[in-house]
Amino acid sequence: MIKIGTKPLTAGDFHKILYQGEKVELDAAAYKKVAQSHEFLKKFSKNKLTLADLRNMPRKEGWLQKKMREAQELSAAQGRSMPGQPGAQPKSGKPGKPQKPINRK
Image 1 (spheres, rainbow, N blue to C red):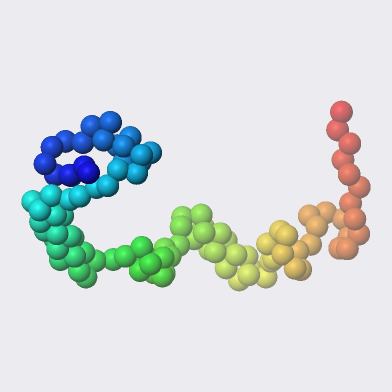
Image 2: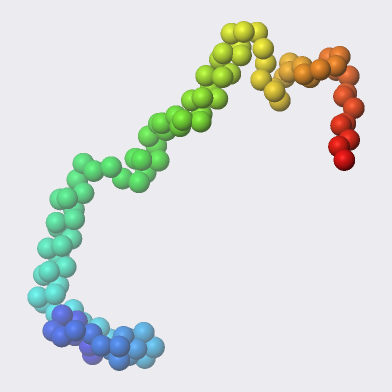
């Protein structure tokens, strides 16, 4: 049986634990230290944001999103529609008539 907390673990100890099924026992002093660390973490984490809290928070509008929204509002105020959206007209030619492709060489 390997007692953790009395001396540093060696690579041989790890090998015995992982591959040979060696039993492990925690030293009383090490157990006390683990318990103290756990209590500290419980006190420290009280009233802190969790990952779930962060995921549920409203997202801040990014720079590009803000500029796109402003452009859409401006074009809507001017009576225009954004390219690719319903009601968008081709730049040239008759509305609804497909344009000829430009053959460049």
